[in-house]
Image (cartoon, rainbow, N blue to C red; front, side, top):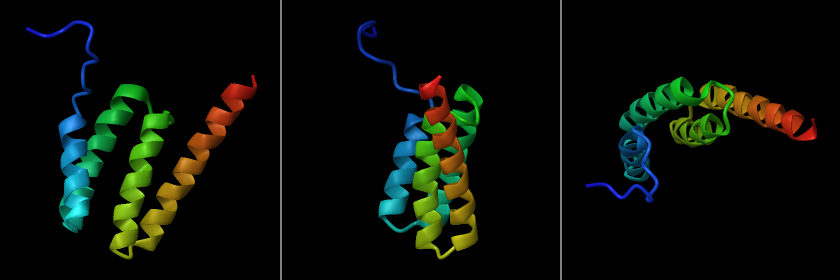
Amino acid sequence: MTDRHSPQKPPWNGFLSAARTAAEQREYAKAEMLYQQVLKEVESTFGKHHGEVGLILLELRQVYEQQNKRSKAELLYRRVQEIRGIYQLDQET
């Protein structure tokens, strides 16, 4: 029986937790794969320009940086900046 007052965890929560654990343990290939799965799920749920997507992109970017995949990290940084810009525009209107 679930408590209807407690917030339900998103379906990708387990993948996100596993991705963070893999990154902490320096299992970057595994972390990258898991973050990609989380990103796919979050984008599917909220759209490509949602703040949750930006947060996942930042975490995946860190994994790329740890692997010296600087060009991939830079692309993710640009996407995050784009998302931030969209949210700033939304707040101004």
